[in-house]
Length: 217
Image (tube, rainbow, N blue to C red; front, side, top):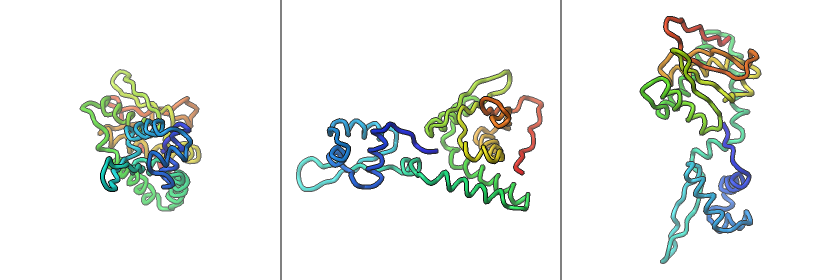
């Protein structure tokens, strides 16, 4: 899930990533804007957890500051992650042994859940689902949450894995396992964009309804 920023922020982040400019004056010169404008952009990026600041002391007087990208920014700005994910997913799908393939897909989903688990908070299913939606919103993937009778519905307005989903709907199995583990609830894919619906929806299991088998073939 790549970071999407305004043009000016993109330019600033690219300079920081390359290491060509790391101080306010260097960034201002490279982008042809004022020091004040650069500071405003840097403050905004720091508030989003994408940039960090380090003091540089050289003799007496006030220290200068050097700005660098955080791990969060480096992770989100990676340009080849999508290609790598598609290749790895295709290789998984080529595994002939159904049990091995199925088990590996489940392990991938569980590994993702372990990565995100500390970020999903709440006492109720709805609270946890809203926390999950907020987590994906940070990655520029929009989800809505609503309640219907005794179920809570997570509506995916954007697919987190659009290219993978278009060629292999088994990626939906990963999302079902991921959401079930993060929400501590049985979750089912109640509708899917690949079936002609306007969006995908994941819902908690109504009382008395058995959870369908996860199809990963």
